[in-house]
Every structure is written in structure tokens, then in C-alpha cells.
Length: 168
Image 1 (spheres, rainbow, N blue to C red):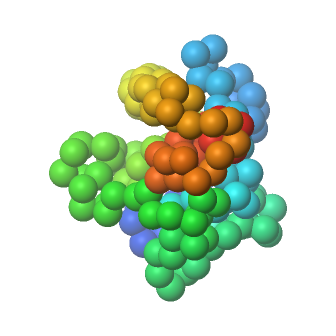
Image 2 (image 1 turned 30 degrees about the vertical axis):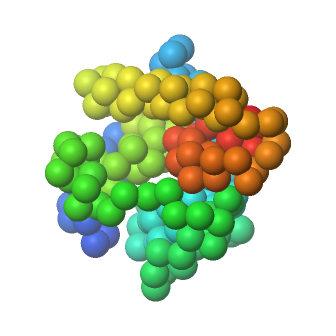
């Protein structure tokens, strides 16, 4: 029987969704993230500020070793130690947010990982995820493998999309 999640945080009040797939499984065949949400949070993404007020929605183990800062965005919390984020206002202006996921792609991914499926939203977000491959190609073309000093902002941005930029 599907589980219903009710969200009440700073950005959503009374939002409800169903978990219809097993956690971490039954992904679209074109969507093959290299990192789980927990791994991303542990490595350091979004300056540690992302999702600090909505922990109750997700498994506590995701946050046990997460590199977070509930007070401010801190680029030092990121794996590559640089800022690779756009402000939420830019995300809104560019149309990158949906009513279902007002925090953006990573919120979508966390909910998708947990088992929520919204076919139209999923297809759109997966197409955005696939488009990031152009950045991976640029890093591969211009950097020696494992040289984290080469294009660190681009590597951090790649990490924000569940690709393991440490492997490039």
C-alpha cells in the first residue's frame, strides 16, 4: 500500500504526495544517478544550506554526516570548496522550479529516490539531468582526471546533479 507524505516546512504547507516505488529503485531507465541524496549531502552540496528545514521528510541517516549549515550558505561546505549555486530567485526567473518541488532539482531527486512518481515532472527533470552531460564532457576534455583544481565550480555543479565529479 502506498505511503502518503505530508510536507509542512518553510516552502510548502500541506503538500501531500504518495510513495509508489521502492526506495532507491525502479528508476526511469534513462535516469542513472551516480550518487544517492545521502552521499551528496555527505560530500557537500549547495553550500550546506539546502534542505536544513525539511529533514523530517527524509530518513534521519541522510543527515547524520551531512555537511550542512542552517544559518548561511557556506561554499566551504561544498566538496570542492567553491560556490557553484545560483540564488533561488534566479531559479524562479528561469522557470527551473515547479509547484511540486519549490526547492528545485535536488528536492525532486530526493522525493523521486524515496519513491514518488509524477510522470510529467519526472520526464522534465530527467531531461534536465541528462543535459548536464555537456559539462561532464567539458571537464573531461579540459582537465586531467582527478585534478580537482581544474574547473572546480563546474565540478561542484556536476556534483549537485548526482554525477560523481570526483571521478572525472
